[in-house]
Image (cartoon, rainbow, N blue to C red):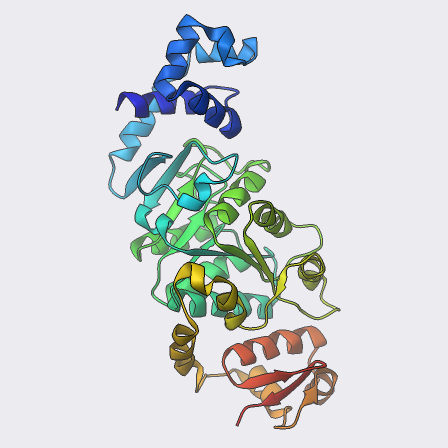
Length: 366
């Protein structure tokens, strides 16, 4: 308890961020030793006089509040020496000193895939995120996202559809659900075996600078990051960049050249991200690492053998023959936009209703 309390005091000390926190722990051997050095040989720590003054008088009361919070049901406080602290996250240079977890903290040790994307996606983007999340959850990957509106929400909901736990990494304190519209979703995630995670102090609000900081945790805990839809300048691309810098896989779903939300994904693909058309594309890359296999995928496909399709999907399907058909032909025959057709073709392929051919052609399966 003495070491945990010292870590909390160091964590709450003004001016001590993750990088400095980790450096001081490594240098001194423990958080308790850091404060002993502050009292005996402060100059050896190599910090500024301002930070040193804060270290001499840390906010002890905040640590007490955290310990009281951790005693409540479903709450867990993770430091780097806790068995549930994510192993992959430990590898990054700015690993969070403390993680506040509400829900199933053991889930953080599972093999995770991050799914991120636009807060204002197309309907096709929402459907794609949900179905990929549902399918991949059923195959053994834990879906991790940021609890934001749009693609994040769809990814969490897809995992819940598969009756699997999903992890939401928050850009606020663990006691502040943001956006408020996702309060019900957050509760359902916890009730169904998932977890909410934050590194921010309790009470922290949705400040703009907190979300890029949150994104490094999403990518850092995951084997790979899948970007569904993203504009050329978006938080999702920040997550993808962080994933690449952390040595993780980056996946991107292509879309119509006329869809502004496909441009971020196309940019990632040009930079080396793996182009994803089906769940198999992800499993091929992560299967051995995540202990999931193509057999799992095949077993799950039976659920899509006879999908229930709404009118627009039925229309697109009827516009395809068993011979390869160009997407432009489907657009002309259906009267739908190229963006809508492109998204629906991707979903139909994931459901096993159609297959792709080289040159951007599609056909119905027998």
